[in-house]
Image 1: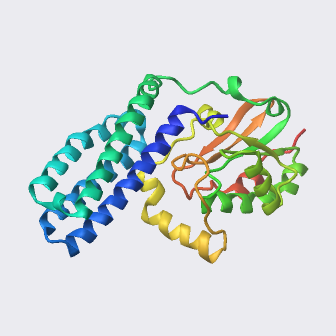
Image 2: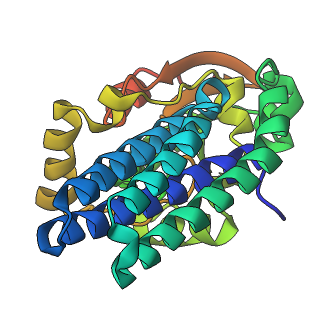
Image 3: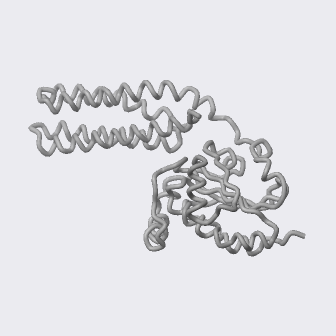
Length: 290
């Protein structure tokens, strides 16, 4: 199944940011070695600004969708500067200018294709829980854990934390459901790795349950702040959870909810990427099924 356009736009912008960073590195090397360092240093600055624009837009495309278009006149001005500065007379200058043109054309075409539909979705409200809740969760008592993307070290820490709580949950008449943003294979692999094969695994790549439960997407400080760096080192290195490739929305924060017959009894929404919500304490105070 094709990815939703909103997700495709974010991925496109992230890739364009990476391409712009590569161009910045190339321009930096030419500034160091070439005969016109001032021109190439301008190229470094322009490419870094373009990368920042693409990255910010990928963070919240609905709010910043127009930002990458500001790179278009800047790229054209940079090409004129390269020409006037004599850099176009060299083979490296020609190659670099062609790379800028390709990036510029790629940017314009894809953004024009994707932005119109994405912007049209800006005012769309989050779905109601009853509209997206799977049938299994409409009956009985559930602890539903919604994890971050599968490559996140905190996602892995969450799974390692909840795995020993399964017997306690069963004793209290609750079942465990894990919601993730990957595909079925991703869920099956995580279930085997963390001893959670008895849990109900639900793939939600479009984040409908996340949105229905009002789980937020993280901002810069919530994802890369000092607390996340320290906690990431502890979880990823000292505790051996490691990190993997991005699989899902990298900005989506996690959380967990208690459902009784499809009704939300309690919900914890993570305040940052490292917030697990003290799952052992939460399970410990769950009432036993009467």
